[in-house]
Image 1 (cartoon, rainbow, N blue to C red):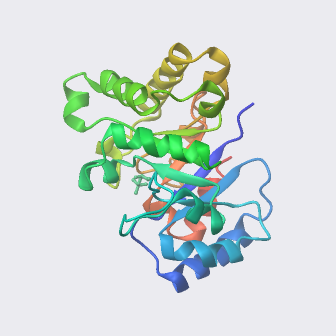
Image 2 (cartoon, rainbow, N blue to C red):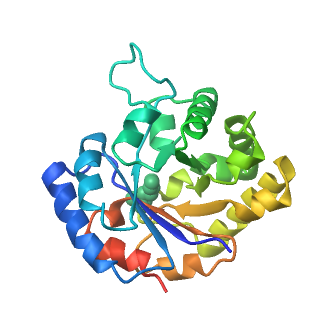
Length: 250
Ligand SMILES: O=C[C@H](O)COP(=O)(O)O
């Protein structure tokens, strides 16, 4: 049985005061939830204070990104050890904004995934197609390519612990979510592909989120889909009330 996982991705939002204020409200609102895992992936400067605010809760903390090197001349980057030292259990790897705006390719993402596993950080690997790829009927091939390239050389034992997030680029920040059927169709395809690459046990264990315009009013029908185990939530995770409604989707 896979525990649903609802995770915020704040992107480039919230200074320290705003982050602390939101987290204090949010933890009160979800204090009675025990059958859904909730997490917050936040900007680097917010992680230390958030770790203090969330210390008395089960709410997980994650970084929005991570570099694969332990240390060295890599100005502006964060190592796996650094994010662990401020309480991160998770790190988003390969968000489409990192791929598209910052040019992160699948070879780099593969190194980041390996570094995450070596340091006991659970990656949330984002995969998904662009609109033109869906229109050209290339969306399944695109996602399969990403899975095979990003997970190359990664053992089943590690893969089981990771989270995959299917985020079609055309649904991110647009207010136009994929339909629950479109999301389920791709998430099932992802699970079947993981079974082909590894085995059925791994495919059954891995949690697969949907991300892209998830809101309090559409989360329930998305979560009714049998293969969807949670959501990676951008704009609707910025307010405590709205994100708590998503966590309490039932
Ligand atoms: O990581 C989150 C996704 O990019 C979704 O963002 P959104 O909920 O604002 O569409």
